[in-house]
Length: 144
Image (cartoon, rainbow, N blue to C red; front, top):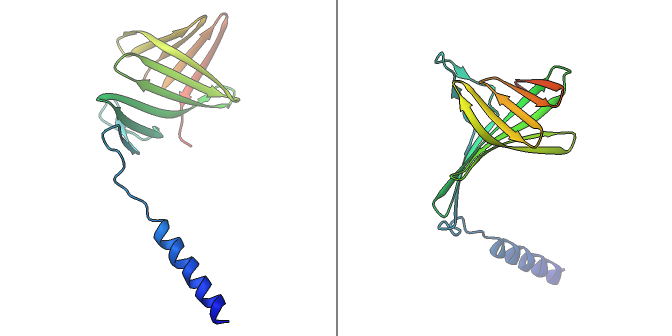
Protein backbone atom coordinates (compact mmCIF):
# COMPACT_ATOMS: atom_id res chain seq x y z
CA UNK A 1 0.00 0.00 0.00
CA UNK A 2 2.86 2.39 0.84
CA UNK A 3 4.48 1.67 -2.55
CA UNK A 4 1.26 2.51 -4.42
CA UNK A 5 0.90 5.83 -2.58
CA UNK A 6 4.60 6.62 -3.10
CA UNK A 7 4.38 5.84 -6.85
CA UNK A 8 1.16 7.87 -7.25
CA UNK A 9 2.68 10.84 -5.41
CA UNK A 10 5.84 10.63 -7.53
CA UNK A 11 3.88 10.51 -10.79
CA UNK A 12 1.69 13.42 -9.70
CA UNK A 13 4.75 15.47 -8.72
CA UNK A 14 6.54 14.75 -12.01
CA UNK A 15 3.40 15.54 -13.99
CA UNK A 16 2.92 18.96 -12.35
CA UNK A 17 6.61 19.89 -12.66
CA UNK A 18 6.95 18.83 -16.30
CA UNK A 19 3.79 20.66 -17.47
CA UNK A 20 4.95 24.20 -16.69
CA UNK A 21 4.65 26.34 -19.77
CA UNK A 22 6.55 29.51 -20.46
CA UNK A 23 4.33 32.38 -21.55
CA UNK A 24 7.28 34.35 -22.89
CA UNK A 25 7.79 32.57 -26.19
CA UNK A 26 9.72 34.03 -29.10
CA UNK A 27 8.21 37.50 -29.25
CA UNK A 28 10.60 38.69 -31.97
CA UNK A 29 9.03 36.51 -34.67
CA UNK A 30 5.27 36.88 -34.24
CA UNK A 31 3.26 39.23 -32.11
CA UNK A 32 -0.46 38.85 -32.24
CA UNK A 33 -3.38 40.78 -30.84
CA UNK A 34 -6.85 39.44 -31.13
CA UNK A 35 -9.95 40.98 -29.66
CA UNK A 36 -13.60 41.58 -30.21
CA UNK A 37 -14.08 44.96 -31.84
CA UNK A 38 -16.82 47.33 -32.63
CA UNK A 39 -16.77 49.70 -35.56
CA UNK A 40 -18.36 53.09 -35.93
CA UNK A 41 -20.48 53.70 -39.01
CA UNK A 42 -20.74 56.97 -40.96
CA UNK A 43 -23.39 58.31 -38.56
CA UNK A 44 -21.21 57.76 -35.48
CA UNK A 45 -23.24 54.79 -34.27
CA UNK A 46 -21.50 51.62 -33.10
CA UNK A 47 -21.74 48.81 -35.63
CA UNK A 48 -22.19 45.70 -33.47
CA UNK A 49 -22.49 43.24 -36.35
CA UNK A 50 -18.74 42.69 -36.73
CA UNK A 51 -17.79 39.34 -35.30
CA UNK A 52 -14.03 39.42 -34.93
CA UNK A 53 -10.95 41.45 -35.70
CA UNK A 54 -7.30 40.58 -35.34
CA UNK A 55 -3.99 42.31 -35.96
CA UNK A 56 -0.84 40.22 -36.49
CA UNK A 57 2.71 41.45 -36.94
CA UNK A 58 5.35 39.25 -38.58
CA UNK A 59 8.83 40.71 -39.09
CA UNK A 60 7.47 44.25 -38.90
CA UNK A 61 4.68 43.70 -41.46
CA UNK A 62 1.17 44.10 -40.06
CA UNK A 63 -1.77 42.00 -41.22
CA UNK A 64 -5.33 42.87 -40.24
CA UNK A 65 -8.23 40.43 -40.53
CA UNK A 66 -11.87 41.34 -40.02
CA UNK A 67 -14.38 38.51 -40.02
CA UNK A 68 -18.12 39.02 -40.50
CA UNK A 69 -21.15 36.86 -41.09
CA UNK A 70 -23.38 37.80 -44.00
CA UNK A 71 -26.79 36.45 -44.96
CA UNK A 72 -27.87 35.85 -48.55
CA UNK A 73 -31.38 36.66 -49.76
CA UNK A 74 -32.23 32.93 -49.62
CA UNK A 75 -31.24 32.77 -45.92
CA UNK A 76 -27.84 31.10 -46.40
CA UNK A 77 -25.14 32.27 -43.97
CA UNK A 78 -21.73 33.12 -45.42
CA UNK A 79 -18.48 33.86 -43.58
CA UNK A 80 -16.57 36.78 -45.06
CA UNK A 81 -13.00 37.71 -44.10
CA UNK A 82 -11.39 40.98 -45.13
CA UNK A 83 -7.58 40.69 -44.96
CA UNK A 84 -5.26 43.65 -45.39
CA UNK A 85 -1.48 43.24 -45.71
CA UNK A 86 1.14 45.75 -46.83
CA UNK A 87 1.16 44.10 -50.28
CA UNK A 88 -2.55 43.52 -50.98
CA UNK A 89 -6.10 43.43 -49.70
CA UNK A 90 -8.28 40.37 -50.17
CA UNK A 91 -11.84 39.24 -49.54
CA UNK A 92 -12.48 35.58 -48.63
CA UNK A 93 -16.00 34.23 -48.94
CA UNK A 94 -16.69 30.81 -47.39
CA UNK A 95 -19.85 28.79 -47.92
CA UNK A 96 -20.55 25.04 -48.23
CA UNK A 97 -16.87 24.19 -47.52
CA UNK A 98 -15.77 26.30 -50.51
CA UNK A 99 -13.68 29.42 -50.21
CA UNK A 100 -13.40 32.11 -52.87
CA UNK A 101 -10.53 34.61 -52.48
CA UNK A 102 -10.87 37.85 -54.42
CA UNK A 103 -8.25 40.62 -54.65
CA UNK A 104 -9.05 44.30 -54.22
CA UNK A 105 -9.05 46.05 -57.59
CA UNK A 106 -10.51 49.44 -56.80
CA UNK A 107 -12.40 51.77 -54.52
CA UNK A 108 -14.75 54.63 -55.35
CA UNK A 109 -16.62 56.57 -52.70
CA UNK A 110 -18.06 54.09 -50.21
CA UNK A 111 -17.84 51.08 -52.56
CA UNK A 112 -14.84 48.74 -52.85
CA UNK A 113 -14.44 46.26 -55.69
CA UNK A 114 -12.79 42.83 -55.43
CA UNK A 115 -12.33 40.50 -58.43
CA UNK A 116 -11.06 37.06 -59.43
CA UNK A 117 -11.55 35.62 -62.91
CA UNK A 118 -15.23 36.18 -63.78
CA UNK A 119 -16.36 36.84 -60.17
CA UNK A 120 -16.74 40.41 -58.88
CA UNK A 121 -17.72 41.55 -55.40
CA UNK A 122 -18.90 45.11 -54.80
CA UNK A 123 -18.67 45.86 -51.08
CA UNK A 124 -20.46 48.71 -49.32
CA UNK A 125 -20.70 49.31 -45.60
CA UNK A 126 -23.24 46.59 -44.77
CA UNK A 127 -23.73 44.61 -47.99
CA UNK A 128 -21.87 42.71 -50.68
CA UNK A 129 -23.09 42.19 -54.25
CA UNK A 130 -21.50 39.12 -55.85
CA UNK A 131 -21.63 39.13 -59.62
CA UNK A 132 -20.66 36.07 -61.65
CA UNK A 133 -21.82 36.06 -65.24
CA UNK A 134 -25.57 36.70 -65.19
CA UNK A 135 -25.93 35.72 -61.51
CA UNK A 136 -26.11 38.41 -58.84
CA UNK A 137 -26.14 37.40 -55.17
CA UNK A 138 -26.82 40.01 -52.51
CA UNK A 139 -25.33 39.49 -49.04
CA UNK A 140 -26.32 41.59 -46.02
CA UNK A 141 -24.29 41.86 -42.82
CA UNK A 142 -26.06 40.09 -39.98
CA UNK A 143 -25.79 39.31 -36.29
CA UNK A 144 -25.59 35.73 -35.12
